[in-house]
Length: 420
Ligand SMILES: Cc1ncc(COP(=O)(O)O)c(C=O)c1O
Image (cartoon, rainbow, N blue to C red; front, side):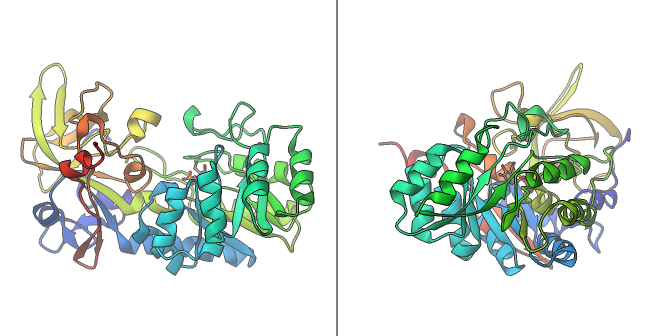
């Protein structure tokens, strides 16, 4: 697509993003210009209606095929109490990867028994917090996890064992987690010993197996393969098939498989390969939150030379996806129809790799314009950082024309607050 997307086309990427009755580009019924005036830029905005309907679709699509299924929201994708709270209300469970994510999930109102803890390097702090909260499941990723649970648990803790299925998912190499060289899971050849130790331990209730092959996966076949691999390891009460369904980030990318197609492929394979009475869990993160979020920036500089650089008041401090995984976003200038110009959207950090879009088509960008990037609900807030001592943006929930702060903007005082 060699032109900027029209304002009405942007809803194909983030459904809440569309022109309002007055023609201005709006999100969740709030004009972006008004949101910028009230909350400032840069800001991450969340359309509550999309978030809620996506969560509900996940529950419906999975339980329709397998009543004894569970959807764990992967908290790492958007670790905000209000986000996890909304997932809990919609009937989801969640997973956490640290004591910090656990605290966020509990603060959001997720019942402890619906939470599972995973991670390849859990500390005493992580496992201790999980045991103290009484969470539903801990995923054993190493024999060290077994040692820690045996040392710290006061009563039998339900556990599952993460395997490495030897499936190389078609995704960026930094997002593939199920192949032989991945750091995750019990090494092949040692799974039976891990299961036997957990099953024999008075401190553990060994319930089943866990697999997760990676993230931003746009083909369904590798998920099916992972079900076949996990099934080959025996009969258990619970199988957790992980997350990984990808999202569409740019107008010229194909539409991602739907939640319903994904559920059909995965739970269809589960019906064939896993025992009927077993519980089957999944852990979607990206696909539950990515399209529900957008990032709103102000243009702070435009350099027209061999290339046109449009510099914004954000960048790799609030969106690491491009720097880490080469994600191609589709930015747009808000409320403007000017002549299309090919531009690189760059951030305000001292780093050449601080670029959120390359060769993007923008409508005659100028200083003071608002620039929006759709599909930033996943892993942007969670990986936000303070490079160059830049405070992190707020997270604003929008719904039916109203807006509220879910995470406030960070201040320079916050940054200084840790110095002694
Ligand atoms: C163990 C585990 N479960 C679930 C997820 C969520 O994956 P995604 O956001 O791709 O759905 C991840 C992220 O990679 C993960 O590591």
